[in-house]
Image (cartoon, rainbow, N blue to C red):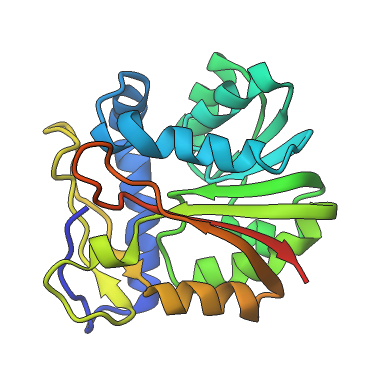
Length: 233
């Protein structure tokens, strides 16, 4: 995902653009994911999040921003019950058709407001945290979704690798579909966070970090993502 600073863009308009983007590109995303068209996912990051989840040995998982539901299908053979949550109706429809878990239509705002009556051993956000305020309010609500001793796993773009030529500081940036395919349209902006900022978000939201992993490209060694594994304090 490429980037351009969007310092003049308001947070609310950027959050709206994120939602609109995924509504418009849900069919293309489903095709790309199920066809293994995204190299970083195929080579490294899909397995990285599965490994991080299984390292905590959960019996139940809440997948927040589940998309078309691939993670539920990946965890089902391991005996993990998955509840997938997403705000895009077509994603939920596709996920239900493919099976592997239970899938509900809901927004991050609804989760933050306590409207999801569910608990699990682990909550996961896999490349599904693109906003600012929506992410911050969601983080604060995650402990209420966890069983005692539960864990929170986040995989996101690696802050150093994703920084590009821009200054290493938090801020809204323009997205890009480079490398994803010509069928994708109108990329969404995303809120860039430094590694220090991500760590602070966990701590400020009542978590302590148990582990930080940096999945790398198998040939170049370039970090493709960062995986945080945390528990409520």
